[in-house]
Image (tube, one colour):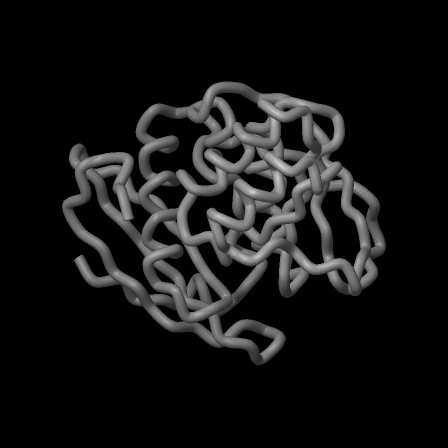
Length: 199
């Protein structure tokens, strides 16, 4: 995966979440010493490293990721509960054909399945070019996933951006973080605070 900055050090660590699920947490240090963090609830450590590199780059610039990627287009993102409508699988050919054949009104994608931030922003650009809305799936409805999706959604132009969760939530929208980086509250998982990162 393409790195957004010169990476000096990477460390990925497996942690047990409060729910009992496993997550991979990554820390990346870029040139200049800024650290960034990322995660995945699947087994793709590359995704966690990619997220951490973008987090480090945004932190080094002192801006939220949405600003770094070209804009901040919303302070709240709608959540939508939908357990039956799947996200599009990570298949460029099928996605391109579906867009060109006008099969979609709304692109439903799982940003954790597509593998990198660059791929997700490319899909969002295609959606904007064809006047399509975009919905980001938080596949496990974990707070970190929802927060990351909110950060990504803030980079997309258009009023039809939303986050899909597969379990009902007590809230209907989430605020977008204005803190530098990707906007994840790492303290939500006690195991994250206990990681002994390698230098």
